[in-house]
Image (cartoon, one colour):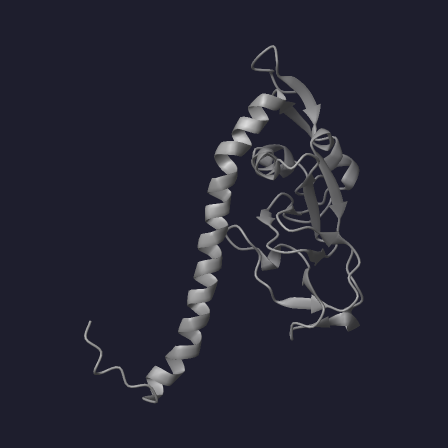
Length: 196
């Protein structure tokens, strides 16, 4: 257990602050890359800096994560994290961690802080590491008073929102670049008269 920094702080477990959904992969015959159905993340292969990259969709989703849920790799390597950009289907390589009381930023950074504890599951007696729902639910954490969690959320949630807005803007700009570049390279669009 952790040392409790203040008399008002308590030892707890992850399930005190979050609900955990373990992924389940739909049938491979329901997958597509054409945007038909529900966004589907199989595992950490789609993970980016903060948000996963849409690659697959499924017409028969099994287990779902909600927008802004923490997505955690539950198979080797255990503990890699991203945040869901949308409601999405999650495969068996992922778990979704959802705040019980709308403190999703607090949950995200709490799980970030569990990295060393989660590393224990990478290869514990097996060739490939994994973690199950019970082990996640009972992961020890330190719980500050509700007023501290509220203040943390008040400060950090807008920063997380800014990170997300910047990510979305980068995606839009990348899409514009990818659509314009072939036309510029072929000479179809002439920009020689533009005064920069």
